[in-house]
Length: 143
Image 1 (cartoon, rainbow, N blue to C red):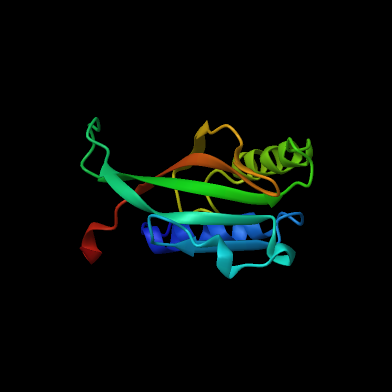
Image 2: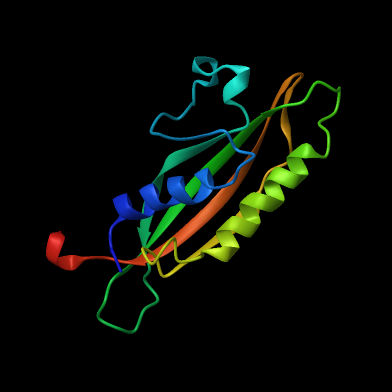
């Protein structure tokens, strides 16, 4: 097990890039992601916001566990006045992909989607936000 957040984050990018319908997966640090840097051909795009970390304080063992709390935002184009069911297919594929590899290729103890926002945006650009939690062991020899 890798025991560090960089491996988990790069593993998440690889994991979500394997969804063929998602054309672009990016990591970013800014509070507001600048989608204007991307063209319609780059969409659907999944933006992974660099996360906050919190220690797991209900442990009885001596090994430290960290919770990595991520926000994923899926941008997509829909030319109707209301988004079509295409985004539902993408959301299901993201959920299924997270569930099929919940250890993020053995870099985490567990991963789960905690929340999904309603569809936001306006014609033609819409987005949905996912709250994702990864739990992993902290490599205390490297701190």
